[in-house]
Length: 140
Image 1 (cartoon, rainbow, N blue to C red):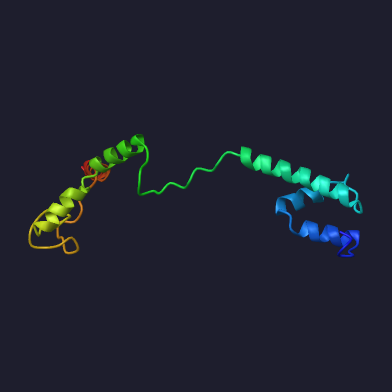
Image 2: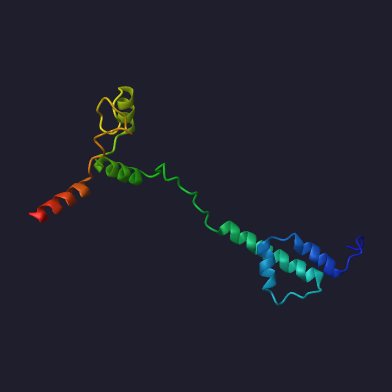
């Protein structure tokens, strides 16, 4: 320290400049650390930093964000399959590939047009069909 010919405030300023932001934040809440005692400040900062590191190590790790495309659990996959198999418009990837290879419409499976020009449209889901039937029976 004597080689630089700095005063105590300069040493403290330089030292605190390189601290982790959380250590600086915690230091600002301490009233018991004297402003001009270099050794006391160093000791307090080392203690704060050690506690910060220990807390960081003991904190539960965040689970990586799961991609909505890939299902990692079997229950999710099973639920997804059940939901898709109930959808009358769902076409398995294998069936889509087969229809494309055969020159058929991916949507309805008929020849002579593509999915964008399909005159048949999507099939009504079970809920939609039930609603239409309910509306028609109410009119009678």
